[in-house]
Image 1 (cartoon, rainbow, N blue to C red):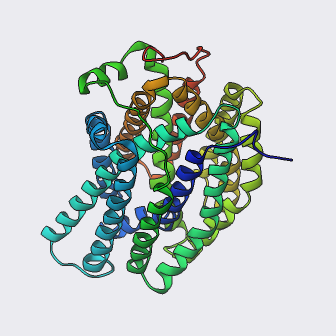
Image 2 (image 1 turned 45 degrees about the horizontal axis):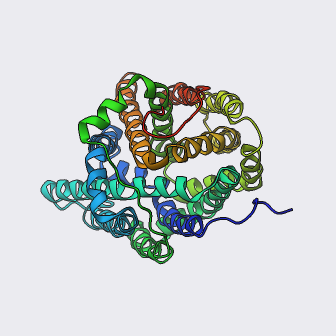
Length: 405
């Protein structure tokens, strides 16, 4: 049976292909980047939090300003330039490992310089990448296929996540981080090939900096902001705290961390495609509400993990429930964005501001909680944050133009 209804756009093929190549580059590091920084900072997790806090806080504050400058260079060119900046970010991590990895230490001034440099590269990359990407995804997907197209995106991501953690763990175990960072640079630059086929879009960001913040805090956008802030807060725990947590449980064995992570995500590919199809035919609001409830319980289960087998069981359950909540949630997000007409990029900026505000708040609450208890109790915060995503289910009729919430 044919999966899609009709033809999919060449624009979606280009943005999907480029995004997947970047996912390979990011997937090589994604699970191990927090662990790498954790080791650079001599196992002081609060410094890892400060590092990511600076990135997400600055990005949230500057995205509305940066969007105005993207008007001058265009979204398509911005997306391509972001690839080069991301490659520079990976190279800065290579330099960090070269001078400070393991027992090496080359002075505090150089360490601070490389850390700041990596933060600057990551900040610029985020500004130049996420707005064009989300805008293109909203423009180049269509309502009849959007859930299925996102299902393919996430299933492909799952396949990547199934292969890369064990591969990355083996590379680190055998050769060290420096080989991994150089490989990430090469793969990252390869994404320029599919991105060169992106069609041109004519979207322009039309709000001023302060007008954007006024919209952000407006009553009509409150539910939207709370939903995406909850999404960002929960995501922060998954990509930052969870890898460090399982690395400690597995006593720093990189290969075991990668192997278990690969095994977990390998069982979800077909399930993801099925949910993508259902997202186009069933009530997304109900899927989000039910999926988020079961997904939140997954974080509670993770509090009690103490062995590798328990990591596998809890994470497999969490991965499956995440599909039921995230696929319809993201499908509904892109539907709302597409319904904005020429205000799709303004909607996307609000989304990014809220998403990163959630990350900032989660880091601040986690710093407080960890100082009082332990790292695993941040999973309660993640469970609560995931429930905030239900605010997207607002039962409003999404219309056209600027005044849509």
